[in-house]
Length: 472
Image (cartoon, rainbow, N blue to C red; front, side):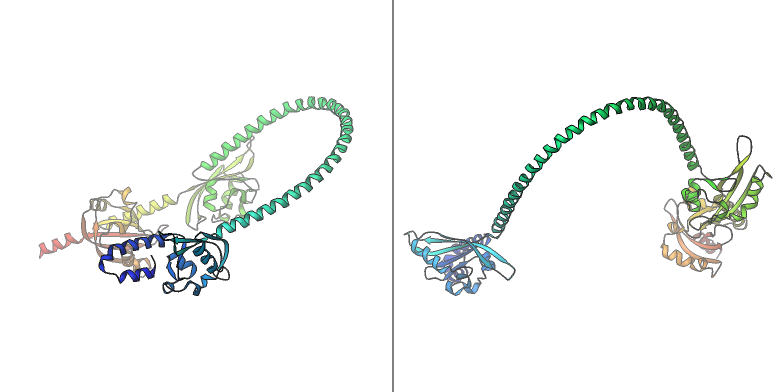
């Protein structure tokens, strides 16, 4: 229960142990209560203070047994000694409502103090129990309720005043209504005249409706044709540019937007010769003129430029005339086809043919930037066990067992920086079946052509070592 009681029971013989444990349980219950409790004995000394009371009222362990009148709580927030004496004398409960208790300058609580006499079996009072209830939230709610009530009364007064104004306005509206009735009679007369005019207008409208329906059908047909044509142009796997006789751009499809980085709405109406894009426009002027002025029906040329990402692009361009029904020239039609991949494959095949014709080892072509496999000979496919389409989806570090990506790049660094044309290193390579073998990898760099690449020649180090031991 209280600190004084614990000290007393600690001095008792062991026979009181069970009772002491019972008191400890009661103390736990009292301390677990959410209400601050103080007990004052009949001589005016503090005999109990639970944990909430110590936190709220500042009563410490050293205050147990001290006279209650020496504690600040005996006179703050209110003088409590008189009500305590009354509880002792009258043997009835005393309750003090709504007491302001200031913890600090900015923190104020509203407390209700409940003083109950504790009686012996013979009816005499041996102590009083003070319970301090925190009513701060209730006080705040009550104050808010009073403010709301006051606001409501003010609103009612304002509504009454507004109601009086509305009554005055209603009288004025009645007067205005009489005037409107007179005006309405005049309008009815005018309305009859308008109805006559409306019938005449309706007849004219029906005649116009027939003409509008024919125009709507024609507009729908034109719109459907335009949408169909735009879908075809956007779906083309190539560029399409249509120009009039002054070389002003009339059509610019999706491929052209993606390749040259200009949207259709930005270039329509622009002169083709003035475009500032990666396409060598000026170099095409002669071939465009030969078709436009009738020297040739159509022409084809290959141009090399830069796409919107700054990458090299090779296009085959077919130029045809835009003719009317009578065969007269109305402009030009340019069809672009990206042949960059064809050029790359041709160069791959050429390089691979050169290497295979001069080497008997396993040969691999690897992209210089991504280190992905591009092509290999039959010996390479047979040794690693990967089909060519599968091999083209993996990179060199993926088949090296004992070197990470950073180590592979470090081994190739002299070659990639251009300080040497060939490097060689040993590593353990992994086949498609998961087996490994030790090989010597010789790498050469080919920077010529449109696609720089690396040529890898692999010798099986395990086979070489076995051959050497046999020879020895």
